[in-house]
Amino acid sequence: MSYTSITFLVFLAITCVFYFLLPKKFRWGVLLASSFIFYYLNSGWLAIFLAAATLTIYFSGIAMARINDNFEVKKTGLTKEDRKKLKAVNDKKKKVIVAVALLVNFGMLFLLKYFNFFGDGVNFLFTGLHIHAELAAFNWVMPLGISYYTLQSAGYLIDIYRGQIKAERNLGKLALFVCFFPQIVEGPIGDSFRGTQL
Image (cartoon, rainbow, N blue to C red; front, side, top):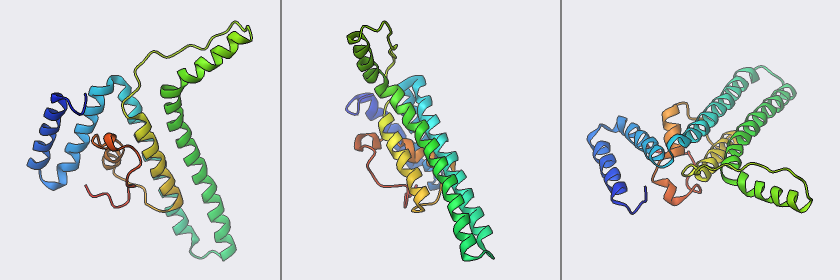
């Protein structure tokens, strides 16, 4: 669905009508539903990667929030040295969570966007070395906006890890932050989750 097509303009008009007809507290739901419909119409079943990215960062963010909450509870009554030790242990746990979540998300990006490129290079090398092996290529269309929502998701997790923002506990609102369809024109380097008003 091209941004200059009649279909997109009709889709946008319908979204706006529902958005302004509903009370403010439900408007984010209209935007979320429209965003998922938009990605599904453009990517079909490959929109599952968007859902996987959203769930990965949601649960990773919640896990880091729990670690932070437990630290706040346990640190009272501890000596300064014990507090530092507990903080170091918690920081290691959060690093593991961030590393795994980023590995999953960038792994999906690599698989869908760059695997064929690197596979062609490896196959060319094999041919030059007279090795009779070949990496298979994926023949599917890349999901719309995968680079955008992968980078946005990474930024969100890193901000939580650094303590710059708190994890969003509402899965729907986080999903909207990740997949809000008009932002794909702008790209992933936008405002962080901090201060988002829905």
